[in-house]
Image (cartoon, rainbow, N blue to C red; front, top):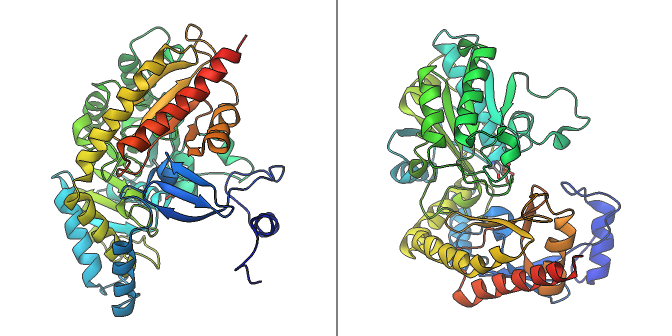
Length: 449
Ligand code: PLP
C-alpha cells in the first residue's frame, strides 16, 4: 500500500486497520497524525500545529527536526551503517560514546552496556545485579525491590519492576521475586499512616528486607524522581537514607535515569544531587533526544569487573547493541547539549515555567505544583482539602489542551498534568504553555459546582 498522498482521514482509517498502538482501546477512533517537527512545534497532517509541552515521551531535549543531527546520521550511514559489538568485534563510534558517557557520569561509573531503549536497559540492569551476586557466591540474592507507581518499562523484567498492575493483565506469570514498596509521594499523605514520609519509607524498607531476608535481595531499582507516577520528587533525605540501608545489607541500587538523564533535571544525571549513589545507571530517551532508539546502562567498577569475568562475560545483549548510527547521533546530541548550554537552559526555563505556573496554585483544582529542572507537574484534585484526585483528567484536561489550545501535555497517573518540553523552549512558548493551562483550569474551576 502506498501511503504517500493519503488524505488525513484516509490515513486515520489506514491506522485503525493496520496498527496496534500501545495502550489504546479499539473503541477510540480519534487519531492525531503528526507529519513534521521543528524546535518545539509539531505539525499535523491537517496542518494543525501543536506546541510540544511533553517533549514526545519525555525526550526531544535539543528540539525536533535538526538538520545537523540528520547530517551526522547520513554521514555515519555512508561510512558504516552497522557492525556488531558481540564477542571481540567493536567499532569507533561505540568506543567513543562509551568514553563520552563515562566522562559525564558520576565518578564511580566505570563501564557501559548499550541497549535500544529503557525497558531493555532495566532488564539488563536486573540481570546484571543478580549475576553480580551469583558470581560472588551469593546464589540466593534474586529479589528486586521496586516501588508502587514506578515505571521501568514494559518488558517482562522492567515491566514487573513497573509498579502499575493494570499493565500486566493476562500476560501470565511475570518476573518472580520482585517486591514493591511505597513511593515517597509526600502529597498523598494517606500513604504514610500519619508518619513522616521518609521515616515511613525507611521503616518499610527495613521491614521488607527482614521479611525477605537480606541475603535473598539483589538490588533495589528506582527512578531518582518518578516520572510516569506524576513527577514525584522525593523528600530531601529519602535517597541518602535508602542508600545507607541498602549498603548495610550489600544490596545494589539501580537508578533508572531514563527520564531524568541527559539534562532533564538541569544536570547530566539526577542521582548525584539527590545523594542516591547508585551502582548501576540505566539511560535511554535523552541520550539521543529521541532522534534514534538508543539506551545505555552504566556500571560501577566492582560490577563491571564481575560482568567481564566467567566464560561468557555478560551474556546479555542484542543485535543493535552500540548501533553505529545511533552512537554517532548520541555523540552529536551530547555535543549540542554541551555547546548550546542546554543544561543551563533546562534549569532556567524550568524555573521560568515554575514562576509562571505558581499563581495557579490558588485554583482549587491545583493540589500541588512540583518542578525539577525542565519538568513541571500540577497535581489536579477535586478540592485541596480532601486531595481527591481529579477524575478523568486525561480527557478533561489533557485532550482539551490538545484539541482546543494546540498544546501537548501529558496527564500521568490519572491526575497529574506533567510538562517536559524540549530545552530549546522559548520564553514566548513557555508563556503560551502556562497561559493555555491556566485558562483551561480557570474555565474548569468556574464550571465546577
Ligand atoms: N524507565 C523510565 C523511568 C521510563 O519513563 C520509561 C519510559 O517512559 C522506561 C524506563 C522505558 O523505556 P522504553 O519505553 O524506551 O523501553
